[in-house]
Length: 430
Image (cartoon, rainbow, N blue to C red):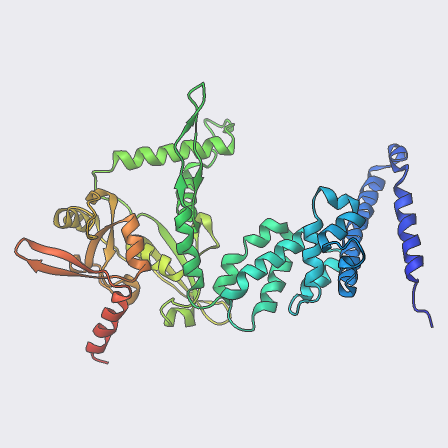
């Protein structure tokens, strides 16, 4: 008993649909605005349905082995280009990628979204590529949930939105430490080009920042780059110009105050973390950085390093997400303390580094997150680069006395900080 049209009947319907497009341009001039919108919507549905049909046909052909059969055997990509001429300018590889995934366990969400017309083939190919890249970094059994998240983001925001989901997926589903490793690896690509100067003397730079750098820069630029009306007149500067002028203002302020003590903490973090993660020492989950860059995910050790030189406002969330405690600003090294550190340490204390004291951060030798006090006996100056290295490689530092006075001594053995902390904890009474 027949339950639907035969394949030949379906093909005839497709031919009729294509024929309906012929001569469409000659009729559109009569259409109302509502008619144009309706026709555009139907045309879009036809495109999505056509993409899904191409993938379905290819999947069937590959399952039969027909793409490589016959006297002139073709690869799947060549087969698509031969029988779907519109892909010769690009797109055949994506069709093959998606069709191949139809038979892969755990990719059902991609197949369903493509066949429903919600997910274009181009976006589906990006979802599959991202899923493959994430697979080795994920905890066991979470891949279907990750694919679901990627599909949902790609449906709503396209390929770019799908790629931007990686940090959140690693924070929620990644193996322990993967988000931190991802952010540490990103630092290798941070760069600022030399200026390219044109005939008018205008200079063009290219800057690449990691998530931490972007969050810090945007937090600083936000207030300075906002529109500023003058005597009731609108600020007609475009956004790019306001941001460039704000960056110049930041540099001028930094240069003017280079020799002065810090008047304010360098940044302010609103750290939102689950109660269990807080009890575990922030070692297993990503942390959101608030302010103008609300929602930026920073890995735990990145937050720990920033906590050496920032105002921390902890917001502890219970299981249901209710706010249990909204903390007050935690007291950091004061301007007077930092000046004493400048006098004591003279420069960055990392072995072999002579970065001037006024270009360094005040680092807690026993991290603030581990209960370290904000005292000079628990402090050391570190430049930005070595501050990052000390936290990433978990180096331990200690204040020692020698003939010349107090100095900071570093144990440059990876993990020495954790061993020192364990030893200290074992000595403390329960």
